[in-house]
Image (tube, rainbow, N blue to C red):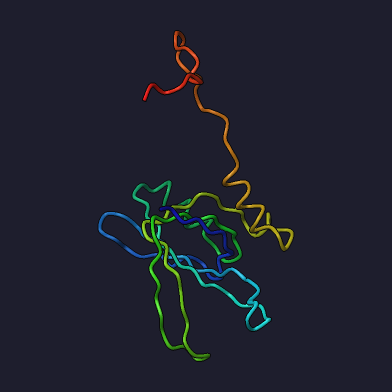
Length: 144
């Protein structure tokens, strides 16, 4: 099952070497309303994405910056707990993450920009190529 989350990066991506790739660790949070405590809280997320070619490395270096809003998908979620200055801290890590969409801080104009970024990233896309000629409609029932 795939998980997708939209969040604002709270620090520039942490760059690290990973074999023949360069990794970029990103962290951010999503604010939500906790009905039990009747207060706003945060869900913290982290993910690592990897690049091999210089063009992709340069793109991530220049765009995974503080304030950027990203849509990130992952195959699964890992829960990490640690004791922080304010007690138990929980972070959800997206495993096998990939960046779906990036909005730069200059593009983020409204409080709902993260939701808009998510909508843009998940909106249906037009097909890249049309069906080959000679194929009938695919609307027929499947024979099983």
